[in-house]
Length: 130
Image 1 (cartoon, one colour):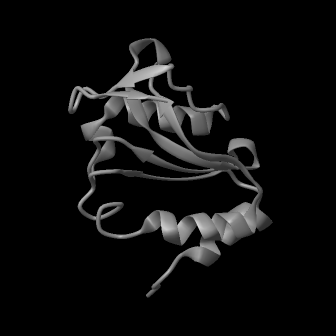
Image 2: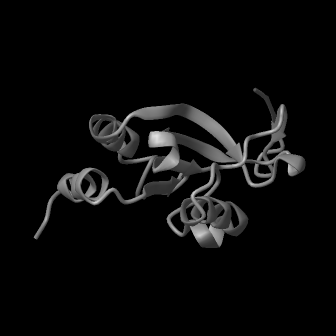
């Protein structure tokens, strides 16, 4: 019966040297909208690894000009906290291409694709300048 998993991340990152990713849909009724996961896990990860990327937008494919979400990275991507824009509790169902891109970057040990200079959101048809 566990109330918090901080020690699991500490063991994975510090002792085992594993790659760690925590992700969540930004419209998840069980997550970013209701529980401040960013406020909980970012300070933990800051204490376990060196932050190498601030909260930065990423895309599924920069040529498509679609915002996939935002991510922090530590130790050049070995540890990552990411949001997926427009995804709910079932992120791979809501945003399958974005979820695949995120998980593929973790397993292939690559960076997330950068956003283009101008990105738009299919959900609300709003263009965002970066």
